[in-house]
Length: 338
Image (cartoon, rainbow, N blue to C red; front, side, top):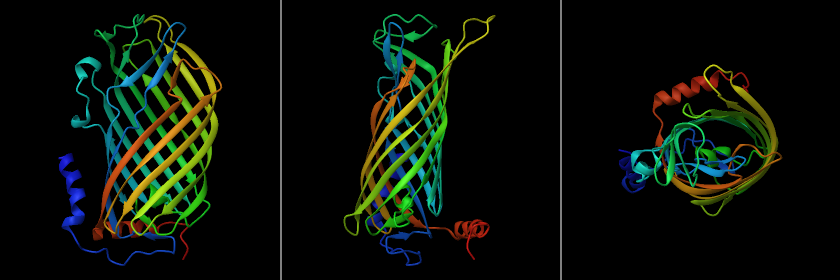
């Protein structure tokens, strides 16, 4: 079914020749696609692994797949996305490394110069390689790997962005509900915050973490011609991480809690290339991140990582029910100018 939808979206421009009505508002730098409902499919590998650093052992803990498919529905000032790893993206060696289940739910809300994002991510099922002597838990293992089918990572995160240049379109980059028609860029500070945990009932330790990172960056969209554009971005951030390691030592004994805090310095980069028409759009982006912490944690994410995203979408005429509903919501905005 998902393959059919993907092919269907690719074929729509060749099948449908209806032009988008000239009923959207615009300025000289971008066009607002206010009366279209767009559906987008994403493919990315933004699924993190992490490392264990003990007294005598260092090893990586990996998911058995890092490919994730996302389905997004975007309309006016709101975007909703669901991400998962369907069967055809699963690895062929699950008998050796176990299965990995991935789920993501994301919400984007746009208001003037603000963009607010909320993300829920859950990954269950990991494996460990090149570890000869596990000393805790009754772990599944074979000749090459230790399988951790109950190991789960869960996160609730939010990011608040603010743009200083109103000619730079957030929507054109994030959910394609606008089309950047002239090149523009903006200084964009942001605050990234959230909660993260690693849990496994079959092992004696869980980790919970709270963090808040203040970032400052600059993002630019180059409009190459009427249909093609490119995005560039660079940001750097600094903020605290509050970590808690919970160790279960026995049924009749209380848990041992160890706390440590980090100051994290992060640098992120982004480069993308996309295609736009009034109906069809698509593109790809590459993202990189490097993080340095002032303390050495027991569990830490890879300090340098990169991931890609490929997306394709189509803009439909919005049903009248959507238009009336959004018109009503926007009419209740207490900050709206009369």
